[in-house]
Image (cartoon, rainbow, N blue to C red):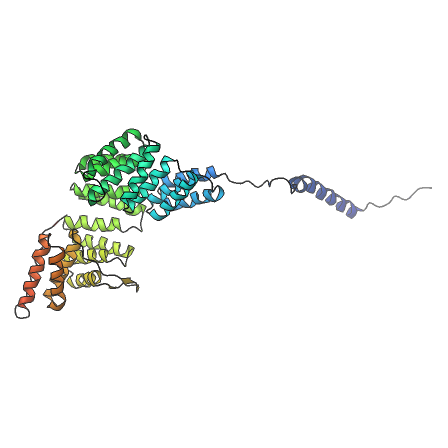
Length: 411
């Protein structure tokens, strides 16, 4: 007898193969990655040191806000590391965020009160805010902890330099200390941006402009992406009569920090010095766009419009500066406070009273002429033009004058 052969069930075989493949996959790729709840997660956690490296690279690129954000993430992961608070404070000073820098140096000092660099940064931040007594104390502490801290000497040079410029502080002759400190800073920290920056600043305030330019260029060679460095170099070029070079530096500063109005303000004034009034007015307007409620910038724009003979527009902007008012977007503009010692502020006032008196608006002009004579009495141009406006009003309306005296140009 012959037994009948059973027919092969191919469907069953296919299902079996699929089941074997599924079990193999589970064994190799799923079960092997499951971990005990008592073991650390295999997910990679980024080390705080990598954040520091990234933040330093961002700082070198001039991306201060990004660098600050990365440092703050490093602090979140390691809140007990005082060096991180000091590092972010340094960047915040470069970014002009002085209150934040002070706060972070104070955190750092709570964690480690014996760190020279933290005291130095605390002093530098206080200097930027005009607290010269507090800055002096902090920097003395920094140097007592480490007399060879080159950056502390650089910050000290800035402090005594600013005391010299503003005639402030407790010292009779701070400029001599500033000079000595800037020299020590360069000797101890030859490759430091701040050391050459401080040395350049001290050269500038002591009228050694060529030397100042060289030091600023050395600092820029260390890091070309610091907007404030280009501004300071531009100011030095302008003081030295190199207007084209000054504009180039202001343009670089504006590229690095487009929201800062200073590059546009400085550009407008440099161009006024060479009678390029149309371009000056454009830069002045750009500065106002950066800070539309700043009356000082409104005054600068009004003055450039006056030089460009756009008298109606000039009167409008100078009125917003001196009387206050409302910006184009509805924000309130506070009036300027007349303070002596600023030749540009004096110009805003006396050009405005001339324009008012020429329009026979003497009820508005005459009180302002008295303000000018009181506040800006040491400025001969201001006194001359205030008296000229009084003369126009004395003869109005019978002999209205259309002549405008040209103020003595001051770069």
